[in-house]
Structures are given as structure tokens and as C-alpha cells.
Image (cartoon, rainbow, N blue to C red; front, side, top):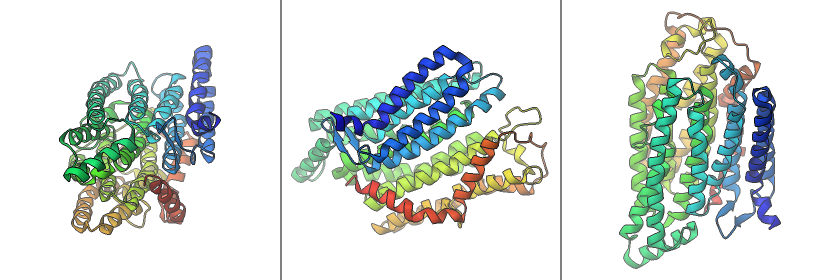
Length: 484
């Protein structure tokens, strides 16, 4: 039992820390916001440190329900880092929004991280579902956290309704897989698929239907086409720190879940789910690129950018090899840095009276009024576009290299061609910043924390980021190998 508890150490630390901080929040009220915020970050750091033990090498727990391996550890580090940043940047935003931040905000993120940790460590469909719902329940509340803001309330309601629908679809898929394989364990499902393929040459019709419904539920969480409809409205309406959570930690966890389910539970059915993934990937790249062109709101544009980038990550999954899976999680790790930096820049977009400004037109001439912010914004946009020599290029290179490694030259060529379309709207923002006539200037920055985080993200995405390639390759390779 002691070994089991050590393997579950990150989740146990987050649960105990979350409950204690919830009690502190109830006792101290708004006076305890700063204390709860800092302690929440400390809890996340402690959970990250606990990954150095059996939580990353312990293997199966509770009969295969929970996986403590290198893949889960890699993903949890990314989730905790993104969540910690989203907690730290929130107090200033909520104070500027017309009030103080409620201390429940960091606690909700901690509980969401528990769900995300269960998602990436799931070895069973029921563990997967419980983790997904725990993460989602916290996300619904976070989306509507500004209760007096109609856009925030609308975002929370839309996310809840569509999220409940997606959860129902996935649960139906779980029931089908259980009915046609006789188990909910990933290993058992893979064995049933392999037996069916060996006997008849293909999975049974019921297994294929279950596969499709489960993938549909997970694809909703990563906002891939055609399950993307909630993303622009929720990203625009939710408070910016919450949108940052959705675009980074939550998306990374959902993508990691998709990778684990595809590799471990549905691995023998590769030819069946590869067709779905290829279609969804290409559709996401195309829609994310084309729909973003006409956007005037920076948060909506970043929503379509996230759809576009998810499509590129899915191309690595379509390769179906360990190299492809390593490319996916490497891409998502780099994507987290790019997206955190972009949303930190959005937080700097405030008029002379300190009110948030979200129009792309307001960025005009930013290079003359805030040259440092303009340079950082350009780095993030070029990285999201995958333009060398910035580090964002490396993620796309890994994905295309994995496709070429299995002979999918045509798919890699299509992906490269489509990346040119997506580059248009990123370059349009850079053009607005550097070449358009100046718009009214933003208020000067009064946050060293945000400035430091923006600078750190920009440095990581600069050519200096290539120094991290050996460490990233080692960690992602070990993580992907854990799934085979």
C-alpha cells in the first residue's frame, strides 16, 4: 500500500493541499487571496518534486487503473508549470477587472490539476472518465468566474452544455468498448482488438463504434475539428487567465490522454483510428488557418491558432510510432511556452485607464510605444507559425520527420503547404505591430512578474531554445517508450 501511495503522491499532494487551502479560503475570505495564491503554487511545486520518486517509475497501481510512468511524469510537469503561471498572473487581472480575485480560483485550478493528472495516468476507461470529469467540472466554474460579466457567464454556460454532450458521447463509447471487449482496462481492450483482428482481419463493428465515440469525446477536449465549435466563444468570453489555463494545461492533458488511449488501448486498431486522426488533423489545420484570417479579436484569433496547432500535433500521432508520439508531446511542450507568452502579452493590452483591450487593431504601431512588448509578441507569433530559426519551428520539424519516417511523404507535404496558410495571420499581426500607423498607446506595464515571464518565454523560443533539444529529446523519448 505504501508503494501505491507513493505512486499517487502528486495527486494526493494536490488533493490534500486543495482541501486545506479551500478551508483557509473559507476562513480568511478575500483577505487570504495572496496567501492562498502563493501556497497553491507551492503545492504544485511540491507535487512536481514528488515526480522524482515512484510517481514516475512505479508502473501500474490498483490493478492497472493508474499508471505511474515516464509519460505521465513528463506531461504532469508541463501541466503543473502552466497551471502555476496561470495562478500567478490572475490576481492582478481580477483586481483590474473591478474587484479582488476570489481565493477559490487557485483552489479550482489545483482540483483541475488532480483531474488532469488522473487523465494522463489513466490505465482504465473509468479512471479516464473520472479524471476528465473532475477537470471539466472545475473548468466550467472557471470559465464563468466573472459572474457579473455576461461574456464570462455565456462562456461558462456554452462550455458546460457542449462539454456535457461530449462527456455523454464518450461515456457511450466506453460502454460499447466494455460490451464488445469485456473490460475497461487499456491492456484488456488492446488484447481484445488484437484477437479480433487476428481472427477476422479487422476489429468488430461494435469495437469500431466504441473507438469512434471515445475518440470523439477526447477530441472535443482538445478542440479539434469538428468538435471545435465551443473554442472561440469560450476563449473570448472567459477571463484571460482562465483562457490561458484552457489553452495550455488543459489542452496538454487532453492531448496526452488521446496519445495514451490511442497507443495503449487502441494500438492494435491503428489502421482504423489513423484514418480518423488524419482527417481531423487536416481539417483542424485548414479551419484553424482560414477562420483566423478574418478575426479582429486577439483571443478569438488565438483560439483558432490553438485549433491549427492541435492539427499539426495530431499529424505526429497519425505516424503511430514511438518517434511520432515523442514528437506530439515535444510539440505540445513547446506549444505551452508559445501560448503562455502570447496570453501574457494579451494581459499587457490595456488602454490608458487600465481597461482590457482585445482588438488586433489596437496593436498598431506597438513597436514605437512598447518596443519590448512588440518584440516579444513578434517572437511568439513567428514561433506559432513555425518560422525558423525560432524554437517553434522545431516542433513542426519533429512531426513532419515522424511522418516521413513511416513513409507518409504526401501527408507531410500537405502539412508543410498548409502551414504557409496559417503563417499569414501571424505575419499580419507582426505587420500591424511594426508597420501600421500607431493606435492609442497602452498603459505602461506595472507588473515585473508578467514582464519577467514574457522575457523568459521569449528567450526559450529564441534560437537559444535549441540548446534544450538534447534534454527534450531524451525526456520525450523515454515518455513515448513507456507507452510501448
